[in-house]
Amino acid sequence: MDQNPIDPVIDIPAEKAPWWEPMVSKTDAYFGENPFLSSFLTAILFVMPILLLFRLYFQWDDDYYAVLLLKGIGLNWAPSEFNYMENAFLCLVLKNLYIKFPAVQWYSALFVLINFLSIWAILAAFNLGTNRFFKTLLFILSAAVLEVRFMGELQWTLVAASAGIGGILLLVAIWKREDSKYLLPALGLVFVLAVFSVLIRPSSLLLAIAGAVPAVVFLARKTKITSHRTSILFFLAAVALTSLIAVTFDNTYYSRNQAWGGSEELYHRHGELCVFRNPVYDETSKPIFDMVGWSQNDRNLMLYNYFMDPETYSAEKLQTLNRYFPRVTFDKNPQDTFSSMFANPGFSAAFLFFLALLPLLSGETLWFVAFNTAWTVLILLFCRLYLWMPERIYLPFLFLQNNFSIFWSLSNTLNHFKNSSQPAQIGMWKLLLLVFYFIFTVHLLELHYSSAHAWAWEEKDLKVAMSRLNPQDDQVFVTWGGAFPYIKIGAFDDDEFLRHFHTIALDWFQRTPINSAMMSHYDLKNLFKDLVDNPKAFLIADSDELNLYRIYMKEKYNQEINFKVYLSSGPFTALSIHSVSGKN
Image (cartoon, rainbow, N blue to C red; front, side, top):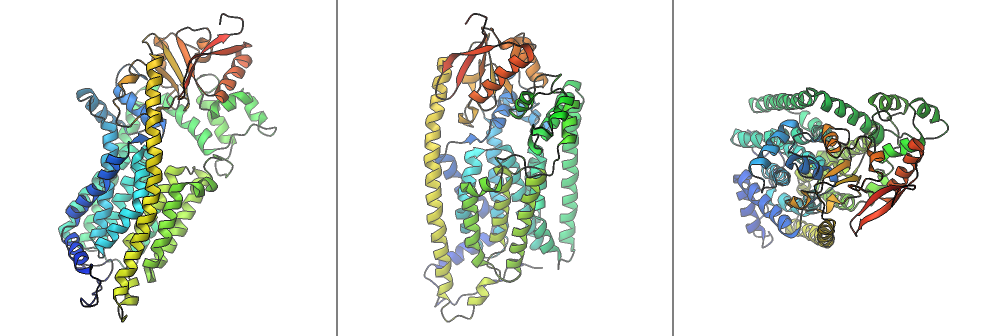
């Protein structure tokens, strides 16, 4: 049985070891004897300061919409499991938990729990090898900035990716270490992480698996399939089957309802065109837009996430445009370019920590990390060409790469010092590296903390503005894109101050039965047209969107409109819409 397969134990003569070496050795031994308990306690110590020092928010409106739909606040009249995002089975569970225990913020708590389990799994993977205490410290210092980002601004894609990364690291460790004593707890934790990753966003798990291909190749070169590893392979087959059942349930649950099935198809075709293609309007493409009956403003409205009109934005017309515009191109999503990635503080932190890890690698492990880096670049190129590459794509890849680097660090590096006449230099070198990590991490966390503090004040401003707005049940507010700042509401807020803020959101679910029910309740048939001269309907949008609305009314109905401020505040502006010839 291979008890220490990851890297050899280097004995440092006691008389020449640094003064702190005995304490470190005892801690390292405890971590090795209790890999899951010690990593569990370390994960608690790692996560608790983040929860105490930082107020948690969601990164995008999407997760706020999911919470409000599950609770039945503002967007719909009753709690609903339909949101297109997470698996319908998970949403059914969350919806019923909200109904029975409405005071608990289940959605946010689930995300924090999964992040915690991911950290636990990664630390357990380190503790199943050697140099456990040092690798734990490396992880804490190198991951602190990204984890504050992941948890301080919760996002469903990042949560699913973190779960996948934690499961993969632990699988690699348990595959490497053939010890049946730890097989059951490791596979149990991996199963929970894998299933939740699939239930939240399966594509995130697939991308994490794609990022782990170099590790699979590295492990498979000289691997013998023992009974221990056969058990792992059967376990992976069970995970794949469970994932397939979950995805099938989700697809069946939506498709059995014709209205939801049709809106889901429209949602996917709209997303393919807006996100994965570059539908430019020019002299070359004008004929295809003419063929589907779109003006340039119709195209601009779609890119600003308006596709309410069923005749203009039908699934067939969207599919026609999808077939015309190529998917494999760099000329899409200009906000998600490599230049924006390089300018991202999260990327800078991850990259600098990665460079600092390189001296800890040598021999085969250094070649593995080099191959893994090249593979990561190729995957990001693929995402940029065929998918897209926002922060929630590249940060998890960098996080996975850094954790693999820590996992395989110190495997051969210390052999260069083994016969040195001054072995104390080893401990001093490690200490200096940790000090560098600590100073850099503290600096970045201080910046995060200052930003979070300012964000809390903006949240107070939003609640003051909502108090001034004082929405009534007979009023409806159309929110366009991010013009209403949901992202400034705390992730663990009870959201009750939005109870009477009845909303038709021009977002990804705008053509769903949920929005249809809201429109029917307020007797709105053609949304933009019926907002005009409607004393009970208001629009929250930015200046670009208002201009698109104005052009829309002129093109479709030859009607001039203007906007009157109903409430103006720092966080948002609510407007009433009037025809030029009507009363203002």
